[in-house]
Image (tube, rainbow, N blue to C red; front, side, top):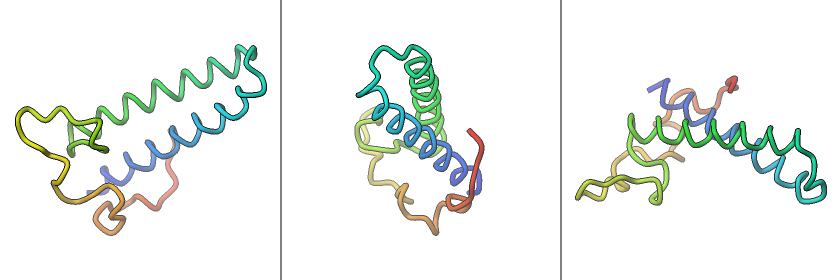
Length: 93
């Protein structure tokens, strides 16, 4: 289960990076370096969310490829920290 928690932390870090850079880009829309950095975080985020979905099921309901079954209700939920060992540790992206 440790890999699951690490993956969740990486997703959170990529999401935070995107949000932070988004705020900067709101006031500096022509900064090509910041835009490239945003794209880098976005690519990592999409990749990580896809990996999470393949290994553990969809991270959010919108990420599901359900194949005739609503997998969103499968345990554990992503926010159940005790079930996602390692989710409270720092990880490198």
